[in-house]
Image (spheres, rainbow, N blue to C red):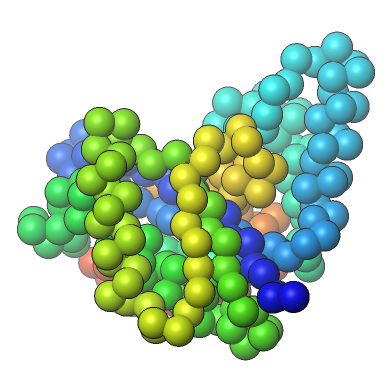
Length: 223
C-alpha cells in the first residue's frame, strides 16, 4: 500500500496590488498522515460545543469567537508534533507587474510552496500526495486558475512525483480548518505585527520562506 501524505493548503491576503490591498500574501501548507488524531480532537471539541448549545458548523479563525479560537489553538498545539507546517510569504509590492494577474500569481506561488513541501516529504518515504486546497478564490476565474495550477506544477515538479490536487470548501475537512488557523496566525504576524498566535504554531514549522521581500531574504525552519 502506498504511503500517502495529505497536504492541506490555505491563503491569507488578497489579490489587490494597489495601496488598498494587503501588504502580504501568505500561502500555508499543513502536512498530515492517517490516522489524524488532531482532526479527531477537533471533531470532539465541535461536538462539545454543539452539546453546549453553540451552533458551530465548522471552524473559521477570522470569524470564530475569541474563546473558540483560543480552544482550537489549544488543540493544534496539543498535537503539534503530528503535523508539519510550511508557508510562503510574499511582500506584494515586490511582485513583477507581469505576474500580478490572478491567473499567474496564485498558481506560481502555489507551485513554489508545493515544490518545497513535496520534496521535503519524500524524505519520509511518501509515495503519493493528496493535496487539498480551500476552494480557489475568484469564483469567475476558477477554471482558468485550475488549468494554470496543473500546468505550473507539471513544469515545476519531477515527472516521477505522484500527486493529486483537489479544491474543496474549507468546511468540508478539519485539515483545511487547521490550515486556515495556521495561515491566519502567520498572516497576522506579518500584516499586523502580532505574533501572539504565531508563537503557538511556530514549533510545527518545517519551513518559513520569503519568495519576495524588500528587506533581506528570510528563511527559517526545524528541518
